[in-house]
Image 1 (tube, rainbow, N blue to C red):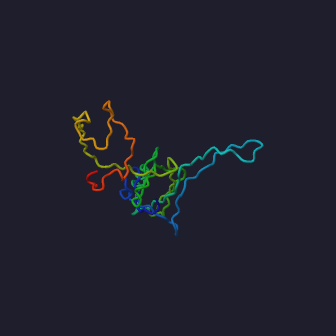
Image 2 (image 1 turned 180 degrees about the vertical axis):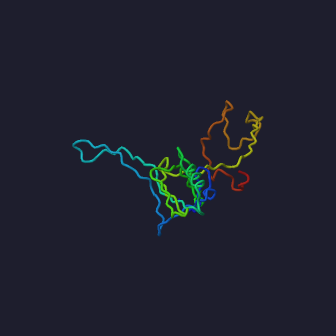
Image 3 (image 1 turned 90 degrees about the vertical axis):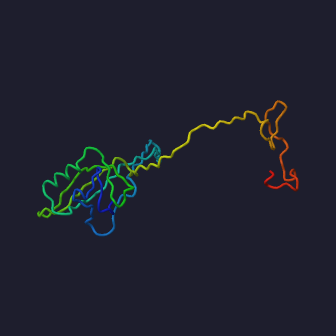
Length: 194
């Protein structure tokens, strides 16, 4: 999520708000690889080994830094605050990686860091609704099916050919108890004759 310069939050493009996703530290990007998890175990008196009951995953949380592309004013700050200050989880993804959608919202400490000349950046901690990212919904094209039923007029095997089919005295199909081998076929018979 850190490699994308521009991002979408709640369906609004960051470029339209005058923000870019940035990194102030030098070096490699640091991102959560696996969600935090806690082992659920029950300790019993007299037993050194606890009973394992499962794993509880914690929701993802990550830090983001959004810098202003240009000089900001009070109206822009209020507009960005209304956009980011949500009461429910909203979709967040970067333009570099739209396959990973995080439903998140800002929590804990948020800071506006500036130089006094209306230039600066915003630091936020985002918390997700679960331990994993989502992927976009994909739909395939609509296929036209011809759903007219097929009616077979033949109701008896006597009208058609019955190659290698055994019919008993009652007129019902039965299994041929003598299996076919290559020696059962005449020498002059070809594959097309089978």
